[in-house]
Length: 147
Image 1 (cartoon, rainbow, N blue to C red):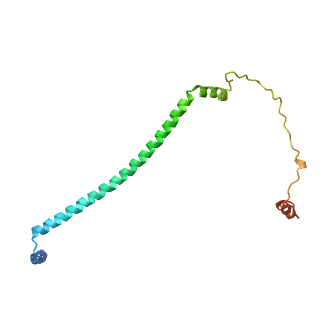
Image 2 (cartoon, rainbow, N blue to C red):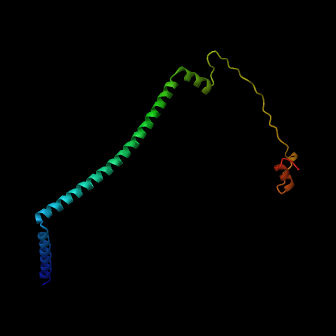
């Protein structure tokens, strides 16, 4: 009984839609074609949108990788310059003189005896402590002794 009522209602809706379409002058095939075309346009638009977003993300990743590559190349240039300097005679001579305290060509080294170091102690009793609550002292100190 319920199924008959449902099928009757669906038939009634179908016939009312068919009559409306017949009054407008469209056929069912034409409406189906319009719906199919609209769904195809929506599908293609969504895929184009996703492709553009993915391309933007790939572009930013590529830019970041390019910046890292440029930094590494500049660091490599610095390292190559440093290696070239360290392989030169000047660098070896500087390391020998400064690092290993050797004499440069044509120099003479002398040893200086500095003698014993004497410690000088300050007598703690001679220093007068500053009274922090003495306002007169601080005002004279701030105004540089002007009265």
